[in-house]
Each structure stands twice: as structure tokens, then as C-alpha cells.
Image (cartoon, rainbow, N blue to C red; front, side):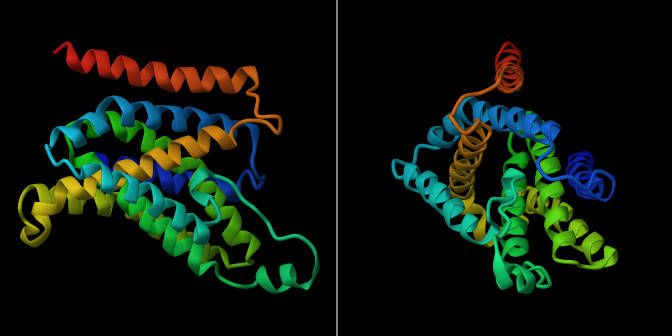
Length: 245
């Protein structure tokens, strides 16, 4: 219940902040992205990948690779909103027409992405990962809210869409708990493979965030370096502390 609440509230607050801030790609959001990307990357390398390969399936790497490519496919529909980025259309009548349409592809792919992100939280390293995912959802929800407002949706429809997005990771977590508890008997045997797919998604998301956090000449400014190193340091402390007990 606590995990679900944290996931839901962090995403919802990130989305609702668009009604207050109403600015795209703020400096603070970029720093949050850099921190969350490095944290998720480090947790994936230190915790999730070793667990995935310890399952003993020699072909498990295929599912990790599949998850990486699946996230690449999702981004063709989401336009990178899960990274907290917006890529508006340029010029002409297409923009005028586009802004009145509900972004169905973005919403669907983003919700599926958030649902899958919640699944590893049922694992033994869920508490470590919760922190990174909750922070990661803040800029993602903010970007989604901005996109919905650009589409000139009513405040009510925007709010309902943000609530739906915020509910996805908790639902993924609850399903994963059900699979582990054999409440969902039919797919419990595929749990390790599902987790491997999610690991691939995390690898894509975290590395993309880190690359997109760089400046045009692919250099980091000092604040972003600090944010990245802080994310890695906290995940490393979690790793060392967790293995010392």
C-alpha cells in the first residue's frame, strides 16, 4: 500500500505542477532527470541485472535485449515524454491541426511504460528502485501534462489523464505481487522473463536520459555532473549497505 501510494502521489503531483509552473523543460526538471536517470541506471547494473542472470536461464539475455528494443518502439509513439522531454511540431497548418487532437499514441505508450516500470518493485530490491522510479515520474508527468494542455484539453480531461497515468505503476506493482504470490497462476512461470524485459526497458530509459541530459556539444555542466554522481552514489550506498546486512 505504501509503495503504491508513493508511486501514485509522485506522478500525480508532477503532473499537477503543470498548472502552476507552466514552463517547458525547466532547469530543475533537467537536473531531476539527470539524477533519476543515473540512479535507475546504477540500480539496474548493481541489483537487477545480477538477479536476472542468476535465474539460470541461458537465453535470458534475449529478453533483456527485447525489452531494450521494445522501449525503442514505444518511443515512436510517446515522442520521448517518459524522459520528460517534449518535441513540438514546427511550422505550418499541421501544428494548428495537431494541437486539438488528444495524443492517444503518447498516452497509451506512456501508460504501458509506467505499468511495466512498476513490476520490479515486487522484487527484493523494490525499495531501492522505488526511489528512482518515483522521482523519474515527476518530470515525465509534467511533460505529459504540458502536452495535454498544448492539445487544449479541458482541465478536467487533463486531470483524468494524469490520474490514469499515475495509477499505472501501482497497477504494475500489484500485478507483479500477484504473480509472485501465484494469484495469477497462468503467467507465474514467466515472471523471470518479464523482469528481464523490464531490465532492458530500464537500460534504455536510463541511458537515453543521460545522453539527452547533455548539452548540444555533448558536455555536462557542473550541476548535471553533480546530479548524476549523486544518483550513482546513493544507489552505490544502497548496494553496499544492503549487502552488509
